[in-house]
Length: 205
Ligand SMILES: Cc1cc2nc3c(=O)[nH]c(=O)nc-3n(C[C@H](O)[C@H](O)[C@H](O)COP(=O)(O)O)c2cc1C
Image 1 (cartoon, rainbow, N blue to C red):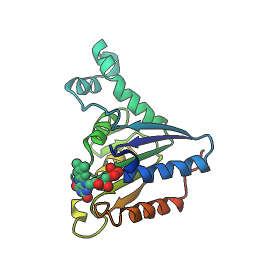
Image 2: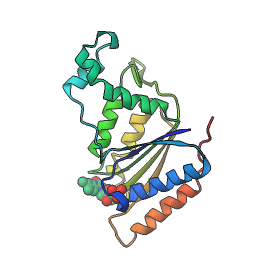
Image 3: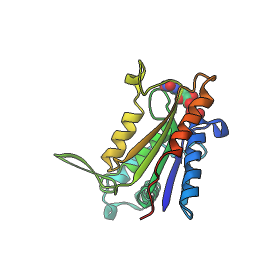
């Protein structure tokens, strides 16, 4: 089994999203011996934002690409290949300014590729990525699952929509919310870990 692990937080050991996602990784390692985990630390090695050259290469058919475009498309192809090869996708991230941190959005912009992960018709978008289990660990200073801030949650609806459009609809969201109150942060991290303990993991085919 192959797991692609995307890490976003720049907060290292003190990151609440990383503490929880790493707990999930430990569970995978314990229950699925031999699991292969590829980690992309988007903070340590950020993926560059899309350039005009990237877009030109992506929208040029492979056989018509110039040598420069063939070079430029390599990063996006590599990211798409990693996604397609994975049996499980794990994304851990904080909410920043009500939405996706831009390093995560940059990854999204490279992997949503017409003809590789998505197609469009008059019926709307069609996902080309074979179904796989996705876990999203999302940490936030405030509480978005309910209450007055719920309408401002542009992270979970956005990531669900993006993943759904490329074919990934089996998405388990694990919230670590309310970390702004330092008196309760340890409690919300522990609650998220305990939710993970009771999760049934996908099994290798
Ligand atoms: C630039 C920035 C923007 C943030 N924006 C929000 C926000 O819109 N809503 C919120 O509830 N928390 C916000 N936070 C707080 C983080 O979501 C919160 O501290 C989270 O637990 C961090 O996760 P981490 O410890 O895994 O990095 C923001 C933090 C930073 C640094």
